[in-house]
Image 1 (cartoon, rainbow, N blue to C red):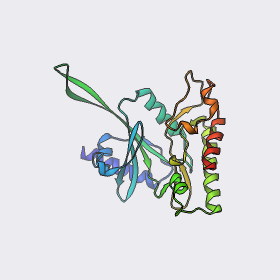
Image 2 (cartoon, rainbow, N blue to C red):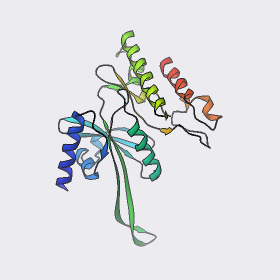
Image 3 (cartoon, rainbow, N blue to C red):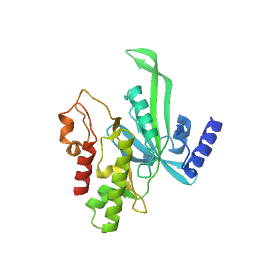
Image 4 (spheres, rainbow, N blue to C red):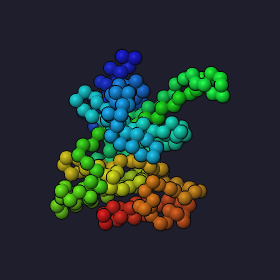
Length: 235
């Protein structure tokens, strides 16, 4: 176990130094170690389907997203596949993933049974500073035109990359656009699918930003990105 954690630490440290390194399979023991067993003190965010924790790797920080155990395995695999494709300076860098199943004795209907406990985790580069929504709501931050233009251009560049990879971001909003110390924006990919036909309307926690055409068409098109970008910039 200690060897596995030590090896994982070294691999993550090298990855943070070398931006060309591919995302890798990360052991659960490593992610537990760097987040202090997913302690409340390390939690830095939450959503409808995941909790986000800060992880310490040497002197560097990473973000570890712990997904709901109710997530279907195929959905997790699809998310990892999309994240592996999305490599761009304006998209938060994906470092690795963990798919772990452990047996645990539990009482079910008065009997002791062995249950499979699944863990789905994603690891990302940590982006310091704040998200765009804080700059919008807090006048003390104050953005000049040069900074605004840089944020607009970076957002559009990131979306263009997703279009080229046939990936649709379904939760584009100010809270998911992180701004680093140099005012460079990076996306957080929260909900996304490959460009494809769907049979049911796509729903999002941020329904107010959904393009109206998504509710009437069975095919998601890139135009919804333009709609969302317009709404974000209008804020």
